[in-house]
Image 1: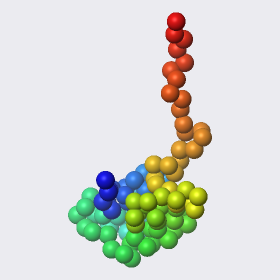
Image 2: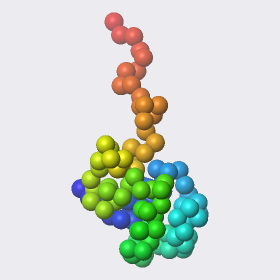
Image 3: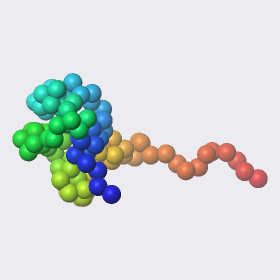
Image 4: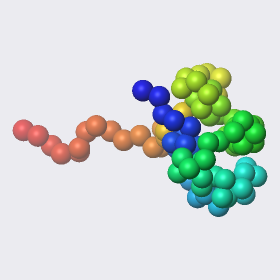
Length: 99
């Protein structure tokens, strides 16, 4: 299932642990525009998308943003994977002894 661009934008921002103001400052996309994109009251144009996806911090999401594909071997990931490496994984075991 494909996620719309407003949801993708929000996922990128949240994955990078940025609020809208911080994301706006980092990308150069005006805060009011960013808010409109995320709430779907305004469609994001190519210029805003390029500003965001060409920023070094967010380039890793370009393939996913444009095509819903990832290529981890090329550094192209989905936001859900951005900050979940080995340290972020948990075991399926509860630690309780049975028997």
